Image 1 (cartoon, rainbow, N blue to C red):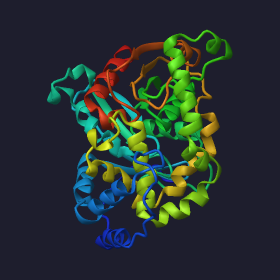
Image 2 (image 1 turned 180 degrees about the vertical axis):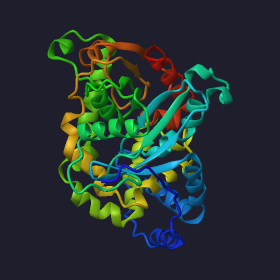
Image 3 (image 1 turned 90 degrees about the horizontal axis):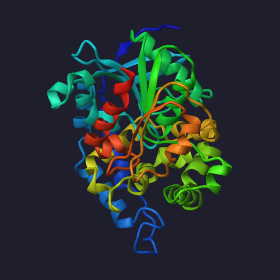
Image 4 (image 1 turned 135 degrees about the horizontal axis):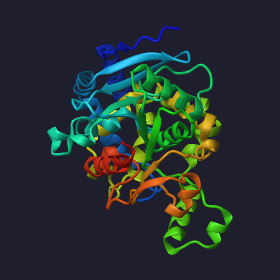
Length: 378
């Protein structure tokens, strides 16, 4: 199998974009919800407004050009084609960094932070904080291949280590939230000497029984958030972890179905005061959606839950770890709980605002946390 790294240039056929617009125009809508809030899901008027903008005003070519300008590549690892962004810093001492997105995200989440991370001097920062950034699309996501066999997080972690070494990086760090947290933790737990440490912005470290009994007021709030997630927030995860193929038929066929499956999560998980358009533009949300719709990855992206959901917090990480706990994260661990899984925490940040999609929602705060978290690992 070739180990070649091949430049990748996006040029989606106009016929595909026309077909998308036709599907949007032909949407068969349900009736309006019977409540005056989002408790039953995306309200009909919000869904119709997003679909109308997508059909009539959204410009995919602008996103396409932005991705092409950054530097996109593909390479085959363990029999699967992997798509990734690779942006080298002009600073000779830059620290190589592999950043991993999650669901329902994509490499689009990182577009606002790659410039400041790779070239801090050009963005008012310290050049000593520079990174060479590699941002792969998870297998089954974006423009990576849809695997024909299982790709749990440990296999992804091994692939990312291979990728970084293939790019010439013999010492590097890893960063991620959501599935990116699980993958980065598995990279940290791999024992590979090339891994200098990790940073996670979703800290998944379930408490031990004795921790629950001795919970502080802050930890009690964290426990309450976990309980809310388990009773009223994880239906999507149970569906994707148990019947991803069945789900995939509807979402792959219907752009509105795929969009609302994801759009709801941007509202639920962002620090947005109840409206995702308070922190993201409608075009940014659609840019991310297009990385699910165009390659048809509804089933393959959901399948990661089927393969790995019960192993999200399985790995104990002995390398240095930086943690950033954004206040509107779905749920998070206290530092005391986190130290059971990550015994060598070198940075614990608690930014003033931000949610699950930290790099996307609050890029300046995210950049500060990444820089601070990795300074001890340089």
